[in-house]
Length: 441
Ligand code: ACO
Image 1 (cartoon, helix red, strand yellow):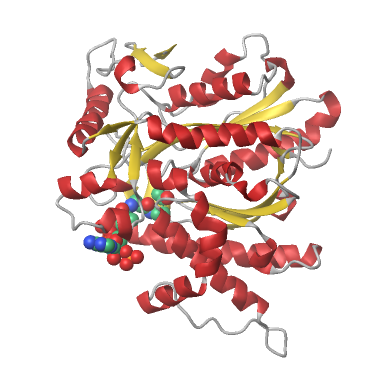
Image 2 (cartoon, helix red, strand yellow):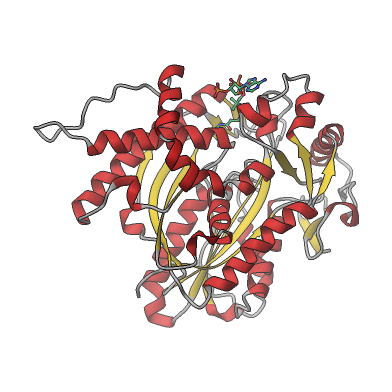
């Protein structure tokens, strides 16, 4: 099989959002810190009647229906998420309800902060490469998270969303996963320990997470370029790619990530007479160094990354889907309507796991359909419902109350009519054994 990769895409995000400028005012923060300092415009959020299973059900059903995918054509379904509602039972098992006549579907959940989605994608590509020649079956990848933080400086960097991919041969967006290069390290920058009092919020060391992210960009890009150089001739660093996508906790982080990648790129390509890389003079941890790197990368930023951050700016950090939302924005643009295009993905998950892998956009008969879906998703951003910062804060309190209440069955306080787009699954109730049931709105 050739060109294994993404053959269909769907994106789901919640109907509710809050303006970052309202949050600045509500939190008594100097105006501009969230909007300019972090580069975020709005933040999507789920009420107490949505969880990782409901948003995964919604996006998977959407994918199957939009592209008329027969359920018996699927042989593998992998979920990438860090939103845990159970320490044993996979989100994947709940998605089997959408495949009533086909139980021969491999795959469970993959977890490591925002990186699980990328690993799920690579895993599904491997599965299709090995299995498609045998029985012609394809795979589905579901990437979903609800990102929420306790009250404090990290709360404005939340978000929520879910993406589903069909993985097949001769794909519109093949992933050249043989070139994937990693940087993996034991780091305590962001984690979700099991504690006596259950919480949906992570423990975060903000500054360590920023430094770890930038270090991961430098290391993965170096490993990636070394690997590519061993196997491909004529590769010209970042010049070889039409668009470069990053895990996006907030878009200013992406700008810094690209600045480091661009600097590493020029540094790797300019060798001295002995073939060694020229000494790296700028330091990303020093403000002046970072400012200079951002200046040096301004053209690449303007042409290859910034235009595709629309979902990231307006929904926030969706954790695992944040990286792949940029692919949708790219497909919605007019950039990829002719010829074959090369794209690059940087995946990062705290703890930490990171990787870079390349992909392509091919002119297949399916491309127009995928582009239509992507354009509709961008339009749907405008049909969301705005809430005040106070209402957003009350909603997070409702989620805490739902988690901690001891009245069974637990029933969410929010009505589906007031908080959901049509055709969205919602959490109906939780019984005394903490078993959850869902209904389609
Ligand atoms: N106008 C414009 N910019 C401003 C203003 C203002 N009035 N006030 C501050 N800023 C700028 C700051 O200069 C800074 O930008 P710079 O560092 O580029 O100069 C930016 O706004 C943020 O200000 P900080 O003081 O650094 O913010 P704080 O420390 O309060 O919180 C943080 C930021 C650490 C990102 C926090 O939101 C957080 O912990 N988030 C979760 C962790 C995270 O997302 N990590 C990223 C990788 S891991 C992951 O994906 C989860």
